Image (cartoon, rainbow, N blue to C red; front, side, top):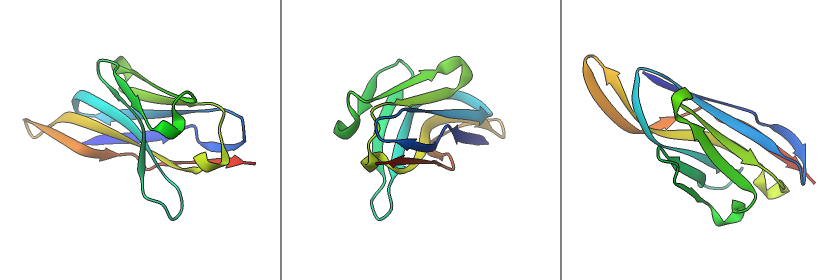
Length: 124
């Protein structure tokens, strides 16, 4: 019913930048919040940044001042601009959305809508 597709990952040297995109598609009625999470090998998944439909944001302390989350509500798209990347930023980055969508004539709300993830590797 709803799909999230991330793009923009890759390999970058320390100090470099990347911009991730997450596009939501399907029978979407509304998206309240969108967030970026990451999971490094052997570590738990952690919230990197989140943004509400009104534009309020929050960030993990480890990325404050380096990463910026934004969204285009008309395009159901969220972005994560990552700058001054460090090797410890290496992880699979996944997009999450708090979505209300149409299903069989009803509105359904889910907080468990995830993309497939995109790998970000920062070399030292």
